[in-house]
Length: 514
Image 1 (tube, rainbow, N blue to C red):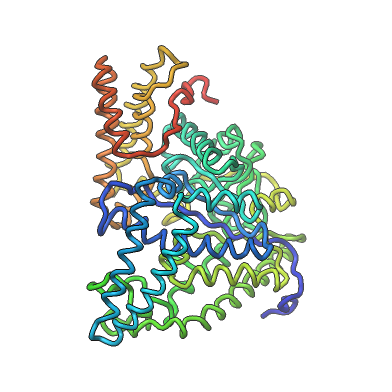
Image 2: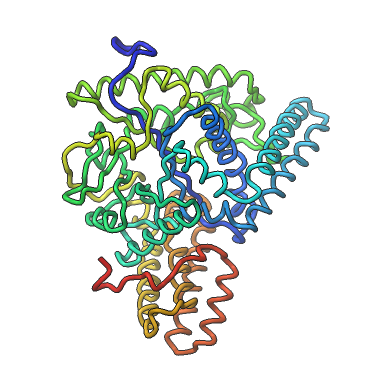
C-alpha cells in the first residue's frame, strides 16, 4: 500500500462501479447447447446472486452503490412468462442432475453432487420467493430506494454507429420508454451498446433526455479522471478506467484466473456441471483438481483487499495529477459475476461493503455528474470497447455480409413503414412488427459472435431469420396485400413475444426526426 493510502483514511474523489447486463433475445430460438440455456445459466449463476447481494446491501442501509445497466431485450426476457416458467423448470432439472451425481460411485462426483444440490435448492427457494413474477419486481424496489442508478439503452442492443440514424433514434426512445413502463423510472443515463460512439450521437442523446453515457477509456484518450461533456451538447461521457478495471478482468488476465477459483471451461459431461478449479493456466482439463469452495474463500478476501487498495491508490494518484478530486469508474459485464466467474457475486458484495470502510466514497454515475466530477468539453472519435477499441468486430471483413444485410433490411423496413403513413393516428400492427423484426436483425450480438467465432452459425441463422421476416411482411405490405401482411405480422409477433409497447407512429420522418 503506497504512502498516504492507509486503509480507512478518507481519500479524495469518488469511485463508481458500473455493470452492464445484456443477452440477446433467446426465447424460443433453440435450447441446448445454444439458445435459452444461456439465459437460464446467467439467470441462476449471475442475476439471482447479484440481486440477492443488492437486497442484502439495501437491508443494511446501503444506497447509491452502483450504476446498473439492464438492456430492454434482457429485461423483456426476465419478465417473459415463457422464460419465467422455463427458468423454474431449469432450476428443478439442475437439482435432479445434482441428485443423480450425489449417488455416483466416484467420491469426487458425489461431493460435487451434494454441493450442486445445495446450490440448486437455494436457487429454487430464491426464485420462488423473489422471481416468480419476473425481473421487474426485483429491479423497481432497488431503483425506488436509491440503491442503484438504472442505466437504460436502445431496444434490442444495436451497434449504433452503423445503424440508420432514424432507426437509431427510434430504438433509443423506445428503449427508454420501455424502462419507464417496466420500472416506473425513465433512465437519464445509458450504456450505449458496445460503448460504441460516432459523432452526433450525443445530440441524439440530449434530444432523448439522456444526460450521461459510458465510453471506454481510450475514447477519452485515457484521461478518465473526470466525465467530459461532448461538444456543446451538455451530455457527459464517462470513461472506463482500464488501470482499475483490468485488475478484475482484461483480455489477458484478472482475478477469475486464480488457481483456486472454479474453472469455467471444464465440464463434467455426464452432469453438465463444472467440477474443477482452475489449478493452473496450462493444466489440461483432465488434470485439474476438484473444486473446493473453502480454498477459494480466502482468495476472494485477498482480491477484495487488492481491489480496494487499487481504487484508493488510483483516486489519490489521479486527484494529485488533475489538482482536485478525481472520479474512477470500473465497468464490467454483469455476467462476469457468477456466470463467468463463479465467486464473482461474493467478491462484489464484499467490495461494496469494504470500500466505504476503507475511506472510499462510492456513488453512481449520476451522483458523480451532479457532484461536479465533470471536466472541460471534448470531441470524441469513432470508438467502441471491442477489439482495437474501434469498430472492427462489427464492420470487419468477416462480417461484411451482415453489415450489408443490416443496411438493406433497414432501408426496406423504413421505406415500407413510410408507405403506411396514410393514417398516422391509428396504431398499425404491421408497421410495428416490421420495425420489431428489423431491430432483432441488427442486434450487435450477431456480428460479435461471428467475429469471435462463438456460435457463429447460430448468430447468422438468427440474423437472416429476422431479416426474412422483415422482408416478407414488407413485401406483402408494399404489394397492397393487407390481409396477408397482417397474417404475417401476427405470426411473427407470436414467435417473439417482446416489446409489445413498440409503436411505429413514434418513428420520425427523416426530415423532422430531430
